[in-house]
Length: 91
Image (cartoon, rainbow, N blue to C red; front, side, top):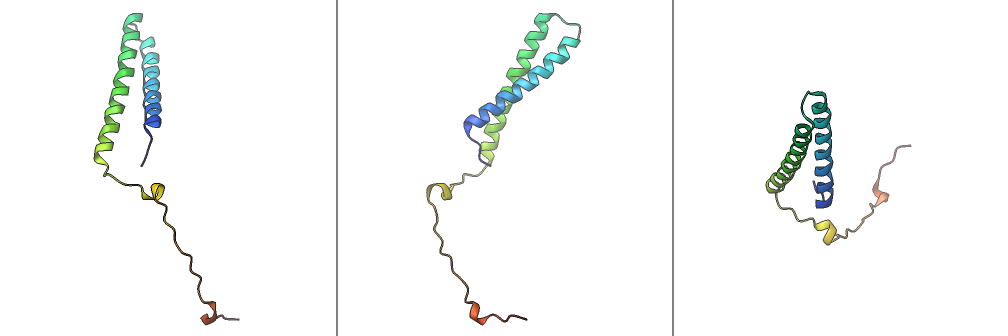
């Protein structure tokens, strides 16, 4: 699977924002001070972003190096037609 670095960055940021929003909603229900809620939400968001970056690096390390030849060197194939005179057709 190929994903560009820009798409990975957008995915990681969106996952971090969703996790931070869920954490914020949960912590606003809890009887904590507002500063504790804000700090905890920011820590969860940064931790999620860091973990997704680390996961991308692990996946990149585990995938074998593949050269995508069809992008840089298009292959031209010849189309051959069959000789239809030797076919047995039922009527």
